Image (tube, rainbow, N blue to C red; front, top):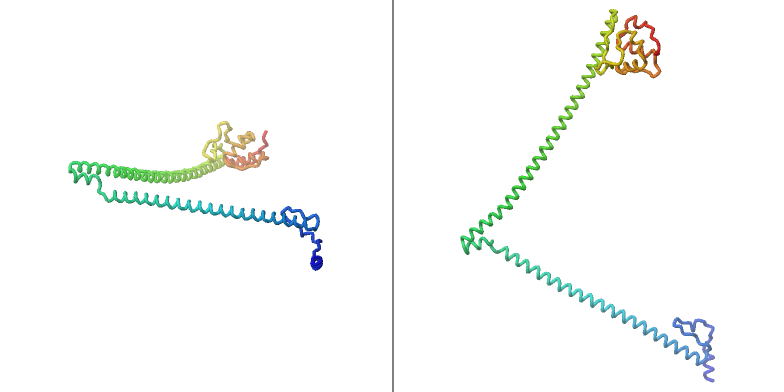
Length: 279
């Protein structure tokens, strides 16, 4: 009777669906009675204790691993420190040995006091051994000096040759310009002489080209206006090219007139001569 009154005073509603939900895989009670609730409670406690045990065990194992790792690190540090000390001792040993050797006099000096004859021979050998590197250094210096002198000489010769070549090119260009001027003067002289000869009724002389050369041997020589009249177009243009006379591609009679003036056929009869087209 008292139990029933106590139960009636508490809210024992089973409408809460999350009451028996768990992540431990424990099934909820099939019914809400003493047997099922006791079974569920015991299973829940057992599963919880097992999970807690596994968690603590994992923590302990991780702790042991950290301790083991730290122990290995400490042992490694200890080994490195011991190795460093041993290397320092070995280094100090060699330093002391080297300083001891440096403080001792050379062997020839010791031999000289022990046995003067042996000491003198040792001294001579020491001098010879010292002279050899000195001689080698002197030879190297002389060789280097000779190489530098040769390089300087080659550079000067090259610069001198370049200046001479430039001067030669300038002289050649100047001579070429002078030669061109002389050729033009010679052409003008022959042309003016022909004009004067035509004023006297005489035949003209052959006029050289502007390059100073005579007209091509296969061209008919021009001594009168009739000679120009009998030229072909190709022969006429070759003459005009040699005298540096410009002309049009479609010209005919005009070509002959240009050539007539170029060679000095400028008398009244020459100008009135009826030139015709090319055959």
